[in-house]
Length: 423
Image (cartoon, rainbow, N blue to C red; front, side, top):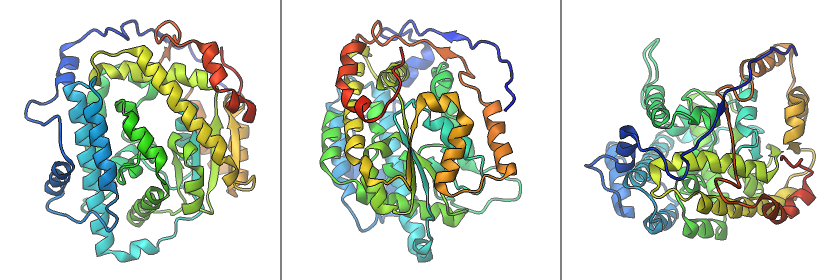
């Protein structure tokens, strides 16, 4: 591959992490709309979802999500550091995913043939946050033989009406407006994890519909919910995700899916149970490097949703959470044999991305045609690392976390997967 000489990325230093400068736009986001409740009950959430869905009221036969919702709401009520705007954002998200569930159940009821659609040998990508999974899934999505999930489609999976010729799907417009407003308040987010409506997104949004998505943890501090989550089998929620994938395939094929989420790393056995013919690719990166990047990203965005910010508490929380995730990964890794899975070390991936591409295609039994190879290599040229600037991380100075001590906690992971320590 020909390499283009690129200018050195601009360094981004976030110097107000613990005590952010509060702009009028940020203050408005922290306060939230005056006419919206900051606390809701399960019944109130479901009633609002029914209203927003135009009167649809069938959430499906399995009602176990109600208990998970009750735990979620209680955990949010116990999170005293959330701003009013942060609470409203979470509740809005909860209502939206319940609207999506109503629409999924409605379309399956009207078109029961959807449940006969085969989800053929899906390709799952798992790996810690900030370990290259977003880059990998957006890269492989250039292959149009694979069905991937855009951000706007993840947020609203059911198409409500046919579009006129040349009409832009209003779901795209809504998603673009939402994330444009978010990045206007937090301009450095694009350099850490830009959210573009057309980009390929995690399938976490599909797990939200069964109230079993770990991404609530990125927006709030909810130990009650985490304990409940790990104490219960997540297999039924992946079965619900399969139903959503069938609906999405019915709207638009093909039926071989490309999916990714860090959450999959702690649910390897559940995925193997629901998708036995899948291919599983797991990226592995030094957890300390992940913590540096993740705490900075979350600490920066916490200025919207938390008061006070408390970066050290955030770092401790995520050190414990990542340890829990990695222990689950190690415990469940043998659910996948070498004929259906691969472990990709981050430093090897960054050193030779083309080799990783060939490894994944060989594992998945996909023919790497010259046309597809040209599309994939074109993506690499268009999307170099640090395209939007390079954020400078300081896990010890800003977040008060002793890196040497933290490495000791992750020794079990280093023993299983030979990731390179990143200084």
